[in-house]
Picture 1 (tube, rainbow, N blue to C red):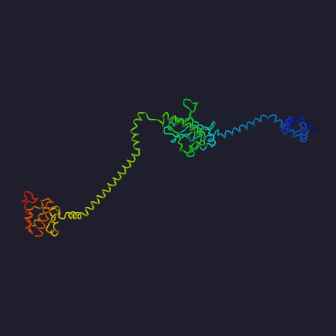
Picture 2: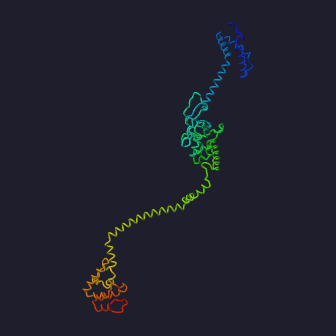
Picture 3: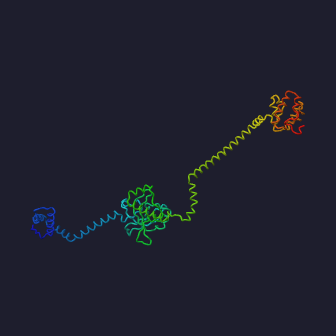
Length: 426
């Protein structure tokens, strides 16, 4: 084998430099680069000629294409890193629903953009999402992302304002949190001014500032949770409260106050409402309804009582008549004194039935004619005298009749200067 010279190998210089670097890094001493050259020459001598030729070829290729290869490797590494970065931030992705949006976007409050395609009856915006970088070969993709205005309760006028001003317009929305109940995103929405396209205005604050909505009450649990957990949501609520106070001071929208004429004209109705809502009026109304119901009950009860009384009266009519006659046993005051004179003289009297005095007088005349007392009766006309005056004499007459003392009868009846005597008696 022929001796090999060091000058025949173009790798000697790089090897020297490499050995120097390793000596500097590893800090091997006291050996130098020149002391390692004999070992390197010995290794190269052991190799055959073919190996030396391959080494020459590789060194030639590296000398020729080395810089370009390094550039290509660096560029490929940079492009791959850029690809993974774009993939992590969803640079080209279009979100069709809220569920497609990653949770990291809500945590980092990423600002997205889109076009409002519709406004539903609850005031939620149906937005067609636009990617950050839209590729030219991708067509229009169907996207319906539901967006709820953060911390705002919309009125009907506010929904109409959204339909009139945001429909088919370009907006930007900042993701704050996700509403799991209706599967929508709670966002802080901004839209461009029509007069100043370069500037954006906050839709949430504009709605509250115009009095078309108000800040959510503190009774909402989701609202309270978002206030404690999300600082940006808290700052947004503070700005909305300032806008609400501004709208209240100006008296716009929901906070609009009536004019003086309207206020004065509304006083009677307000007074009527105050009276109706007062406790005294409510108490009187309750009393009236109770009295009315009681009157209705008493009316129905009286009807039933009347029918019952009528039934009892019709059923015991004869008994009632008998009781009436028992209270006035002889039906006419003419015979009360006679019955009081003696009970055995009842057969000598006549009952007056149904106030038929004429029939009773006929029967009495018949009986008295049989006993020869008719002339005395006719002369005295006893039945025409008042009750208090005839009672004493009726007792005496009946006693005389009972004792059959005719002289006594004639003396009692025909005596003169009686206190109960009246002109034309004789």
